[in-house]
Amino acid sequence: MEKVAGDIHGYTFGTTEVAASPVSLQELENLKITVGFTEEDQRSLLLAGEVLGDQTRQIVEHWRSGIIAGIPNLARHSRTPEGEANPEYLAKSNLRFQQWILDTCLRPYDQDWLNYQQEIALRHTSLKKNQTDGVRSTPYVPLHDILGFIAVINETIKPYLAAKNHSAEDVDRMHRAWCKSMQLQMALWTKPYADSRMAPNEW
Amino acid sequence: MEKVAGDIHGYTFGTTEVAASPVSLQELENLKITVGFTEEDQRSLLLAGEVLGDQTRQIVEHWRSGIIAGIPNLARHSRTPEGEANPEYLAKSNLRFQQWILDTCLRPYDQDWLNYQQEIALRHTSLKKNQTDGVRSTPYVPLHDILGFIAVINETIKPYLAAKNHSAEDVDRMHRAWCKSMQLQMALWTKPYADSRMAPNEW
Image 1 (cartoon, chains in turn brown, orange):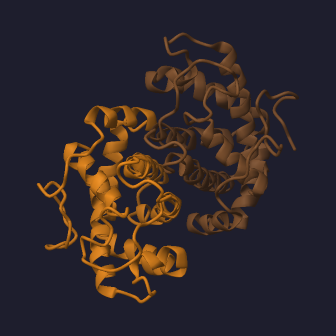
Image 2 (cartoon, helix red, strand yellow):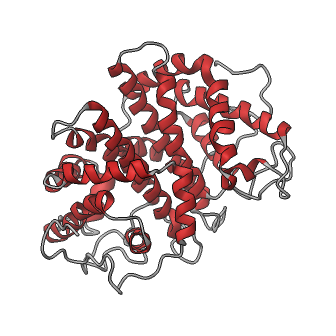
Image 3 (cartoon, chains in turn yellow, orange):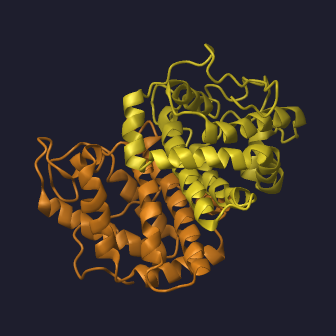
């Protein structure tokens, strides 16, 4: 599997450290049908992975420094509770953010992927935020901020998909597949937030 | 305000029947910033409203009969618990679905709109589903199905936005604004699902 760096701190995809998702593979298959996620979308994501492969650092910089850093409500989640920057935390989570782009495009959406979606979600809730990197920061990322920011991700990814001279049609196809994957992932990420035994009241 | 029919059963937008949203206008403004929803997007939605105005019936037919009816997990929410069709329920909720397209495009996103987003969300949860039309059906629509189906809505709306001979650039602009509005609305709709005093465990 392609990785953005040899050592990605806290990246536990496919390891025994990741618990089984409470969502079943059958539920994932049903969700794919609801989203209209097809085999063509899967192929388009593979192409997107090729296209984005050497741009992940630049893309995450764009999101983090270009956008999130300018929105106090979002920037605070990478800072201390007192509002101080924590460059080490940011650097570590940025590498995982980069790898997430590749995983979105290149991984099969199987049991390991499903488990890791739940892990990603939990790491934004009070159950697991800050633990991976042993930092002090906000206790959780509110669900509405996660869903909201996906709009920015969907909009800003398009020029990067177009950066390798593919036809407008191919770029549109990759972009549609990307957006559908975001929709799948968003739906999965809401799971712990909507569960009264996990992370309720973190909207 | 433009309406798709003189009498839309259960459409209570802006009336005293709609409770105040637990989300504040300030939170909505912050969410708009997170989503990157700009004044240009608002203008693009007004144009989209013009374009879609006489197509809402066709669009909702496409979603309901063309897509939802073929996905048992989704279709059951308009049927009786025994799986029987309820054409009257469908007809009533379809009119509101049509009006929602117009409201998305033409309404200012103010306190009334914010309140109605919460009302829409509640009508999908066990707190309010089926009550508006006095029907027997599934107790709630799972959150992941709502989020999932927005992907289909976003994909299928585009040809309708392009149906009035606007430039590809204008169509793209309308579509981007539409998708951002969906993101705003999805974030708002998760509110009761993520609140342990409202509709937890309806993922």
